[in-house]
Length: 636
Image (tube, rainbow, N blue to C red; front, side, top):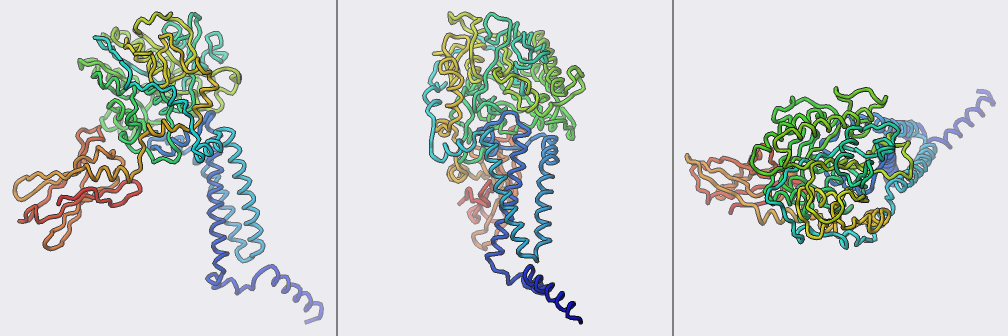
């Protein structure tokens, strides 16, 4: 070998020694790597995955939702997401899930390529860490801009609360509420994302061309509290009422839906504002038959929990339609079934409700106008060159046709119809041309209202929030309300001031953004451990001899503490006291009725095998969130 070749090889070897470990050093030596280096790599990987997922999740929230609140995010983190539109989930996975997975795959692939080049790998990890921190800063900045999230978290951690709700709340349980001798029926139509904004400017809206002309006509001809002028007026959605269940809660209770960020998850109606009176609980006490009719899964957002626990509504949702043959079991469009079917089923149900001889309340929720872009059904026309606008126009026609049908029915003279947009649309683009100074309000109208005489002009203009619709709906049914206030709401037929009229919208919004100790206490959201302890003292084991040496063991009373959906497993363990032999069974729940998931038992027909009941120790174990195989009761 020449001197020149020798020097070249020596330099190459020195460079290899500096930048890389020996080739054989990486083989079989992984186990001898310092534990600190392995731990650092694992922590770096976990932090990177967390950051990438959080970044794309935040992008999804801010890109998709035009209006979003911290209250809404916290609530949905604690309630059921069952029933979310499959189209929405698929779209989120394609637009944000796949890119997030691709970014992580590239990062991990590069790190794998550099696994034997320690310095380069360390430099790469440091660069990724800096990008992680930059991404987290961007996420924090955007969430603060859109959700005021840092302040929200700070308020919670410091225990800072507002007494605004407590100071202004009127408990319906302490107010004299007087129904007329002949009680009026109620049809309540919640229209998904529908605003008065979508009307033309001449009618009080903000659009150049009226997207909802039929609804506009109905509101002008009936009551929306706009005064003498033939323009629309609607309800302002204050914090805690800007998403569907929040809006339904606010219009039913006169209070914003606020749950603690540190509280337990929402599982069933026994654990969700159990002491708060609502429109449903008041009507239930007065003997009303009540039904919630929706074309999506009522479990989403805990709507079934709220309406079951506050008025014992019969839930007729997408799942009900599948189970009863109203639609094929494999039928699914958008969030469940379209509004054309909803109004068809409403006609059927109203015939049933009106023939029962008792006053009724049919509450409906449309879905075809849900963001993003709504659902184009076979009735939609291509009028505006935009699917979302066409969906709203179609919804306007369908509601108007349904109202006209109701007016032709025998029960109509004794029936009040209320039509509410649940909240402003969350679609980011649909209202981008609406001037910033325009006050967006939900659509509101009351048809065939029969409010008691209060001495106040009937056509007075009112500034109001959607919470005011709680006492106003009762008043429209000819119900007298002592003091004309319920919850945070005011009877708009009366001369009493609304909170917006008294304090101003800005003051109400700033106060309702703050955490509320009053609402946290009212929520009744207890820990699973607390509920289990109460259940252990309350449930029993029933025994029923069926002859031929058999006995039926029944777990009774569990529905008083947990909804059936909250119980993931039940075990019956029968132990022979003499031999110590154990037998384990997994009984299925038996429901009192097909569609009532609150009243249920677990039963097992057991063969005694020439033994007496005294020879056996019988126990039931349940599994719920956070607790597996918990002994709930023993028959000693």
